[in-house]
View (cartoon, rainbow, N blue to C red):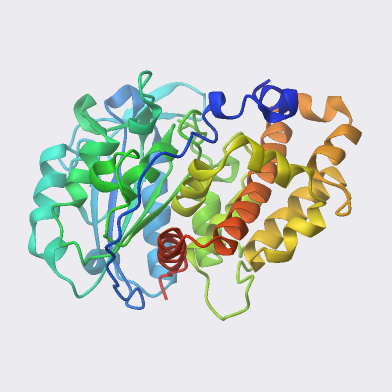
Length: 406
């Protein structure tokens, strides 16, 4: 199992498994301060690469996003742009299963659709006046498919319509078409999406310095794993995926219309992206391993020795420096396994019934808990160090991730 190998031999194989790739990037000393207090403009890029991969769940994700916008007081027609699959050409491209579980295709039915999800349309959008304006930042949502770069998982690709591939580095070049002062927040739900956390580096290359732009993002899973959620099933009540959980946490409304538990873990009266991400780590009962840009940056800095030290500390000790949303994630995941806060992660692990982790979802939840503890422990190490440049980068990423829609 992935989880078993991840933790075997007291974690000596962690770097090789690429969950914690070795950190090698130098740090840029320049920075850009941009207020994130104003509501953003919204850009949605969605759909499959062809009809066979254009599942109805992707269309329904866009429709749910529009409902969330309305619920939070936005006008999807005025505040957002939508690009989906083949766009408005009337072709039957959305794949679904009818009541007899037979495969069918239909025309996309998304209001306010601007066009197809092609590289040409995206390039034109990023060069248009709205993208060039500094009045408001950008929230970009991608729901579609991704491919793993077998030679370099730090530069995976996403798929646009007609099988067009856009790598992390190529996507970063699109973002670079906008003014450097314009803040960008992304949420991406495709397979291997964690690779796109590298858009914080110059040129999207993790071997380069962190770029001066204010950019952050949230991703369904790490760069080495597929994600869940692309289904031709019609019933949204059966959907279990990162998009469903993230936007339920952000808005307080599930995609089926019911209220979701509040994700205001710091009780400041608003739901931040970071809190929605934390909500999804607990709510999304799937194989996904959700990731943010700050978490990816911290893990890239982590050595095997540092990881082992964190996981050998009593969990209660590690949690002393955790933020409210991290406390929520750790407590909820520990409750799943009935673990003891006074023991370390590795000590609790020794006590667990091996049969519990034969289920791949339970396995993923155990890995999420491990990663959350490493996130907390590594952030504390950065704050206790004398590396002012690292601290400045961390604070900038966290400030960006602390933004919200209202």
